[in-house]
Image 1 (cartoon, rainbow, N blue to C red):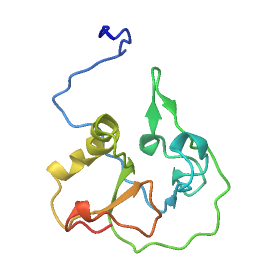
Image 2 (image 1 turned 45 degrees about the horizontal axis):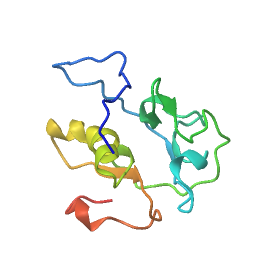
Image 3 (image 1 turned 120 degrees about the vertical axis):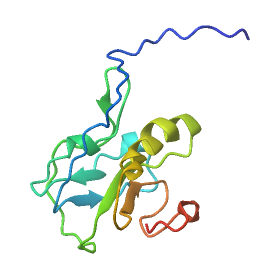
Length: 142
């Protein structure tokens, strides 16, 4: 099998010297992914604001043009257990595939480069259950 050049083009490429915008939300609802389903087959996972709308900046997208993967634009909010009042950094889906990890997971860690103060808790969607915590995150609380 011979290698062929990639035919896909990426639109709207930009090289920027400044940081992307950072958005701060309060009173959000984190809905875990169903562990047995892939991200695209589960439409009830994601990060939603207090009205039940998907937080656009937190949505996971892929493709060209970028399409939202699995999450509903708006949901009726279920009864939830309140998390501790703390600072969280939302990482979106935590992928174990190298390319997806670089582009979709690692890319969301950039705010830590300039963060001062107590470390934020890392909040992500993984393939495991919500009660699990990856030891590879070292001393970071999950």
